[in-house]
Length: 270
Image 1 (cartoon, rainbow, N blue to C red):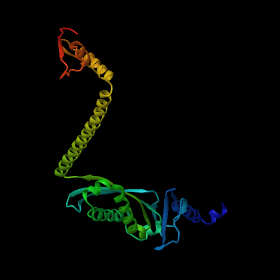
Image 2 (cartoon, helix red, strand yellow):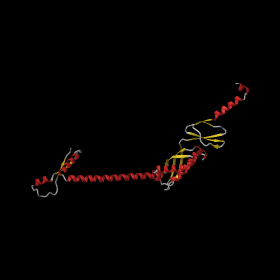
Image 3 (tube, helix red, strand yellow):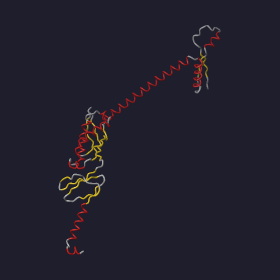
Image 4 (tube, one colour):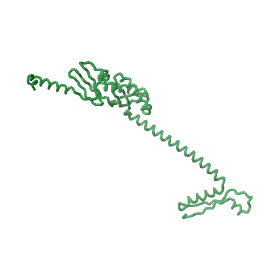
């Protein structure tokens, strides 16, 4: 107390020092790194996470997020190799690996990455056809990622993935693709129907060969046919008689019979 009484200016000075130290404390989150410039010079290592001291106005701090960021590439007008005009949008997933280089190497690494992605999207998709664009998206996404990652590597930014988000086709192209898909479906239906007819004909031929070798099987087939016909009412049934019975009735077993007669029986209800 005597010291403060003898030096009344000491209290305000100490208070100002304490306030300055408190204001110099900066909290850096786990997913952030602090790039510090001291008197305009970049310090060798970024700071954080945790509590760090920033002695302003001598120090300037830039906080850089180390999380994966999603950069939406706006819809781009693309003309494919087969002269089809499209609008294509994409999504770029990037992450900062070197926060010092991301701050010093480029003015705004997110905007720069977005611009690189836009130009690369137009150039790469302009080298492929519409069918390749629709059928090989995974291959094109891998190629886009490699090109964009090579461009952003000097900035300390790694591109982990690029996905083609949407492809807007003109109405006439959509109608043409619809007609093509319908024609392809009709083609498959006709091929399947033809294959079914071929298999059915083979099965019928095999069944006819089996029945022709066994007369009893022919009679069983007659009875089955009668059963199916009898389901309906007001039917006329023709009963074929065996040739052997006709020969016995005629009394001459050696006399040829040209054709077996048929007896028609009309029935009202079966």
